[in-house]
Image 1: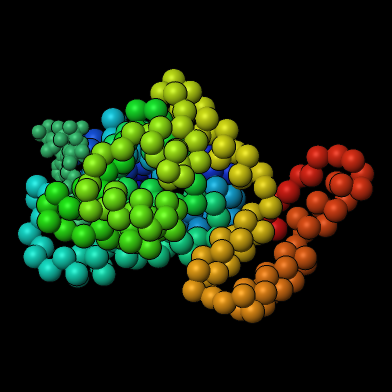
Image 2: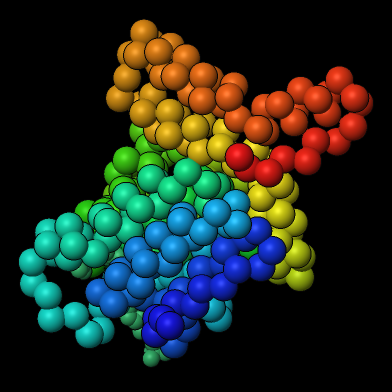
Length: 256
Ligand code: T3D
């Protein structure tokens, strides 16, 4: 179905794997399109309640393919390719995990930052590679990076472009956890399964309004919370959560 990525569902989790290992999973315009299709597919499949994005081979993603592009208007490459992918990820009201198996460079790092969680193999590394080819961080990098690590560290990473290890990424607040190479897959599967059994509708609302909170004042956020809580309060999962609490049992959330 796809040439540059693979897409499969395992249980309630959709797995999207960037699949150009000989180029360290570098992005091409076809990969942008396929990513958007896969993200939309995961979004519309009501059985999918968590999404994992990872890379085939030894890398997560090395950013833009520097070997074959004939595009000279990079603004248009972003508008047509990267931006729709980031927008689709952020709009997806399901949790998205970047399973960072190896190096995440340039727009590959941006892709990881645009996900809701990052689990890094101890073999992973992160590099704001843009500066080394005279470019600026893109694909939401300038939005997500300072929000995750703070302005000063974001400037340092973006301007100096030094590669950081998984352990440093954890220390800077870039990743949720780092895992040994042997345990990596199992840890990602376990984390995705945990998320996929949670109240998906509430997670989607948290994601929607936490993103909006960055450009809102307190009164607006208070109103967003009221709107979100009305929706969550009418969900099946809220009823299930209440009953489970009162009956002293584990809730069985359905995501509805
Ligand atoms: O349209 C636009 O251009 C605008 C949008 C830009 C967005 C961006 O992402 S700009 C930033 C682009 N990415 C980079 O600058 C990263 C380039 N790659 C690297 O710096 C290094 O390869 C890594 C740090 C990612 C990994 O280093 P290392 O030592 O582990 O591997 P390597 O030996 O450098 O690479 C292995 C192979 O993958 C190698 O090919 P070969 O020699 O075995 O045939 C290398 O050329 C290839 N490769 C790695 N990254 C890319 C790539 N081929 C094409 N594009 C790449 N980005």
